[in-house]
Image (cartoon, rainbow, N blue to C red):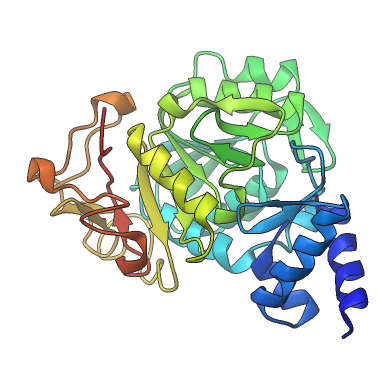
Length: 338
């Protein structure tokens, strides 16, 4: 494929999706990321797109929201690994809320195996993924259907969440930065996500590396409210995403890095179930098992204790760099400074 043809295809993908990772662009145009990066740089020089966090976005700073058909084909391997790992944080008999999104839909498919689970959601896709799970109770919010992402929004959805209390919320979004936290491009979706957060003792954000460093219009979850981020490991050259991860860790967000084989075991207890704490790292293959080595009980993120060993906690830089982490393991990252 000639350079002009590649660049036209890259431009069409970015215009259709709003934001596309270099990895995905390279896969579609069937060339190396080095070549794609050179093409993106040339298109940026012409003012046709902007380079961001290992990818390309529409020019103008804030990315717009893509429709479900487009988003469902982006970063699919990363979303699968994230969902595999995130499912390990859910125990039998818990009550959780799961927001709308393609990554949370993948999570719901895995939660179907957790017995005694109650899932509250405003997403038709999440509910559909759990519809045939005979040991999982699904509670739908009210609201008005937003067709672009198959989610219920509006005052009906928000009012149905009043007075609700669950152990944790699993949310996705359009962008995540250390400065503003999780954000989305739609005001109605943002409002419902904020109501979901209010119902949960802990907030777990699911975001692949292409969303790190991306800032969109409406804030949904401030950084100081996020308990844990489950993401995939950014490419080594993606300095923006790596820097953003470190900044999130510095603010006390626990970072869970997913990789191939993250979900080797079944979710919901036992081996491969809820993650256990070990020497400053959370190991999804260990199981919770209770006792002093278990995860902290649900509560405000700022009250979460550091792992055993105090200053031996894993960090993005120093003790356990991202590049040295084993795929599918979770780093309980203490900030480098307060």
